[in-house]
Image 1 (cartoon, rainbow, N blue to C red):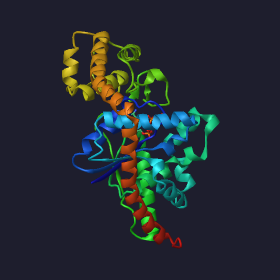
Image 2: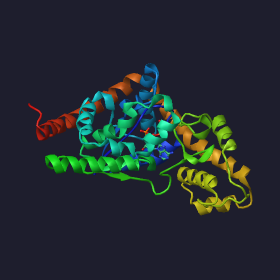
Image 3: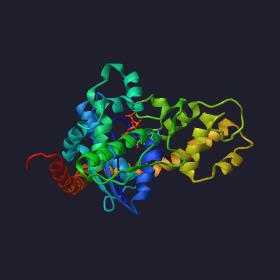
Image 4: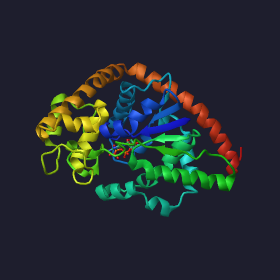
Length: 326
Ligand code: AQP
C-alpha cells in the first residue's frame, strides 16, 4: 500500500501525536511504501513566528527520526519544498463546497478557541490536506481520530474529481489505532490532547522526567479508588490506562491487577516511570539528529527530491484532465 501522513509543526509534538499517528507510521514502513511529511504550510493557519516555524520544522523531522522513521525505507520531506501541494490545493478548492468545509469539527473548535484569527487558511485546511494525500496516489492515511472527518472529505473530493474529469485520484482510507486513536488531555479528559492546548494537558516528547512526574501527578482523575478501565464511568483513568498499556505493552487487565491493592498514587507513579523509560532513549536519539543539522537538512532535501518526482508527474496528468493549456 502507498501510505501518506503528516504533522504540522505548530507546537511541541506530544504523546497523542505519537500514539495516534507516529506509532502507526513507524510500524507501517516495513511492509508499505510510506511518505511522511512535516506539513509546514498547515502550521501557518495559526499565528506562528517565522523563526519558530523554521525551528519547529526541523524539530519535528528530528522527532520522526528519533521515534524510528527510517529515511531509507520512507520518504521524509517538508511540505513547502514540493510546491505541487499548494498548486493542487487551489485546483481542489474549485470543487470543494463551502458548506462541506463549514461542517468540519476542527474548524468549528479552532474558530471558537481562537476567535481573533479565523483565517481563510484555517477554513481551507482540509482542502490542502486533500492535496497532500491525493498527489501521491495514497491508499492509507494513518491518523488520529480527530482527522477522520477530514479524510472523509478527501475521499469525497477524490470521487467528485474522478466523476467529473475521469479516473485520476486513488480514493484513500484513514487508518486508526484500535486503542489510542484519541488520547485525551491530562487536565481535561473531555478534550483531546493537543499541541496548542494547555501545557498541563499534554506530555511533550521533550518533557524532562521531573515535568512528566509533575504533569502525571496533577492529571485529573475520577472518583473512587479502584484502578479499573471503564471508559464511560472513569474516562480520565481509562485515558491514563490506555497510555500505560500502549507504552509498556502490558495488557490493561494486567495493569489493573498490578495496582489492585494500591490507589491512584501508586498507579500514577508507575505511569510516570513507564513514560520516562519510553521517552529517555527517544530524547537521546532526538538530540543526536537535531544536533547534526547538516545531516537533517540533507535527509529532507533528498526526501523532497523523491517526493517532487512523483508529485510533478501527477500534476501533469491533473492539469491535462482539467484543461490547463500546456
Ligand atoms: N490527542 C490525540 N490523540 C491521538 N492522535 C492525535 N493526533 C493529534 N492529537 C491526537 C494525531 O496526530 C497527528 C497530528 O496532526 P496535526 O499536527 O496536523 O494536527 P492536529 O490533529 O490538529 O494535532 P494537534 O496535536 O491537536 O495540534 P494542534 O493543537 O496544532 O491542532 C494527526 O494524525 C492527528 O490525528
